[in-house]
Image (cartoon, rainbow over all chains, first blue to last red; front, top):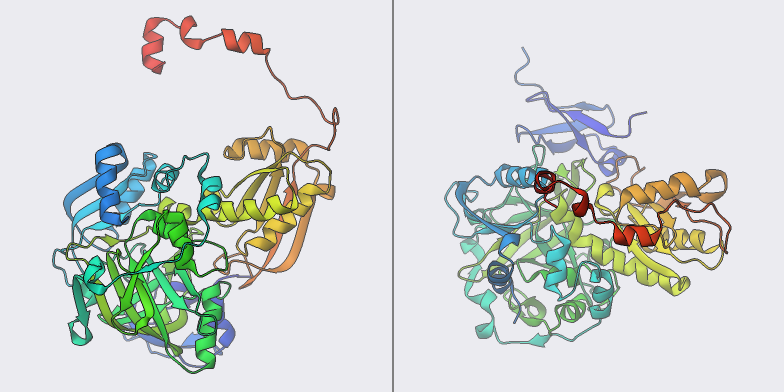
Length: 58
Length: 467
């Protein structure tokens, strides 16, 4: 079982890890910031997916 | 009075090989950490002064960056007039309260420049981004001072602080540390918490601030420095919150416990990134500094970060275990485990229950210590090859291994379940008593004292081997 929770940035599509405290809160809409492209997005920890559309996706 | 500037001048005069000035222009993103990594490959850890570092506006900053100040036990020992071997012992001897003295602002170098309100711009400073996946620039060398609202005691901790804007910080308070309990008190009162971030002072100041004692820490800083710490009133809260007069830079900020924002990832002592989380926001109310201030940074996840804490933690553990087991001889917290997670204990034991008692004491005394190995007095705990040899040849894990699940540990350990971690220890000592164990191999002393390698080598070989 994975011990680290990763999210995928909807802007640059790169993965990075979030802390267990944030995962355990299980919030539906949390603003996160990608450490690579520095852009913000909204993430749903209940559905385990980003709520911000990928602007680069057709 | 002791300060960072005088310490750097002292090193340059008396220990010139321990300090390096770099005059080439540096970017605040990754370039200084890359230099440190190159030096570490060469097994070099000098104090580094970077004279031309760009600030967060892209200009050459007027503040030289000092980094790697804590990366060498010899420098730490020098800072408190000790030796590498005597560092923990001498630290414990100095770790006694000395009341601070109050000085007027006009006598305080840290008040040479005072900025308030709209004058404040943290982006003027050469604040580094250390690792590739760090969220951005971090104050990694600040000693954050907060005051317990009930007791008035001041807690000092080097914590990671994300610089989110010219006057905005996001502060990481570890839930297992005293500072977390203090911010919870302010949260309970629905009050902002005053915080002073001290950037740059004599290394003994930082060593004192890393005390593990539950004390009014500025008093302990005075003890470790060997002189009463000079304090002067803050700009924001006056005499209610004091700041160190001889500091290089002081940031005064109000922390809002209920207002959180994104913080992390950040490369940590474990060698991994601590994940993104929500942490309290702080608003900068004033910045005061010397005219020619140094900007101190600490390189996370490297020797600079490891050794800022390890000797002090060793001293604390040594004192705790020695109280229980008089035969305790030394404690080493090795950098191989981030200088936090492992502890090696050397003892001359008098009964077979002492090693496991020492293990339980060490695992409880410091929440971060996760694995403990206890060895006999003939094992050099600073040589990990010898420690592992003792584990290999003196322990049987069905009787010598302890595991305690569900203890409070380091949440940054990626194998842990948040704050919960399984801890353990190995008794790698021989049974107590005489002639209870196999004898170690050795050579006759009369021969080892007589034989000198250089006497048996050809001149060319001596030269090649530098003997």
